[in-house]
Image (cartoon, rainbow, N blue to C red):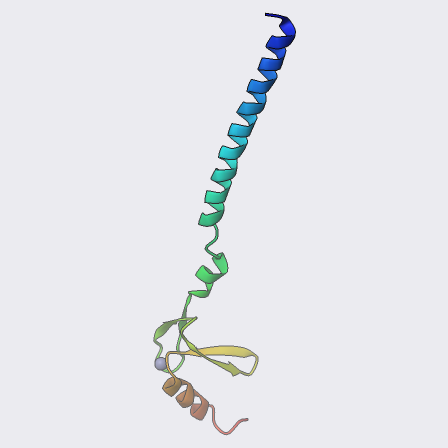
Length: 92
Ligand SMILES: [Zn+2]
């Protein structure tokens, strides 16, 4: 066997090895991407907010939103929202 053949075999083995590892790494990356696919903002948005009327804690995504002055106020229900608005007096 000539030394050139050995070198060619070594290169082929190396390329095959790299392809194998590359493919494997790709799959690993895809998997981890799927894991991180859950948006973190969604988790953050699932924060509990306090209803200022009945002081119940409500998940922000389900809460009734009301823009009050510069803030956004969250309520457990439209009833609380209405109550809050009526409690705010005649302003606006
Ligand atoms: Zn409420």
